[in-house]
Image (cartoon, rainbow, N blue to C red):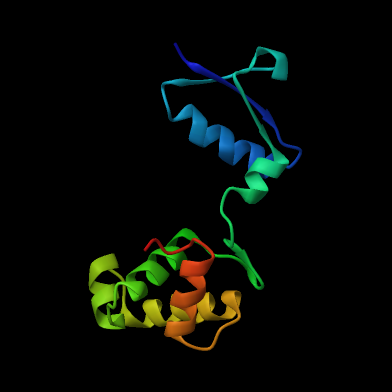
Length: 122
């Protein structure tokens, strides 16, 4: 039996993205009305699903989160670059964006805030 989900999202981009994620799961069926649904995904659910992901400078991208999590594991820029198959320059670019968006000045502060906000698992 499939989980029937209704998307109560006014933002078209968010609705398309969430719908695409749900359609990828063969056990989920999108329905046209809330009355037909087992689960209703609303604006409030989407806004609170990733606490701290929307930081002062905007939301962290998936790659920025990856970089932050690798920093939290103690990897150097060179090790992160090798792990993600990108250049060290690109790692520095992503790390600078993470620091800016989180409003911190160092890798240590970024990891500390990331842990407190639930962005970095313990």
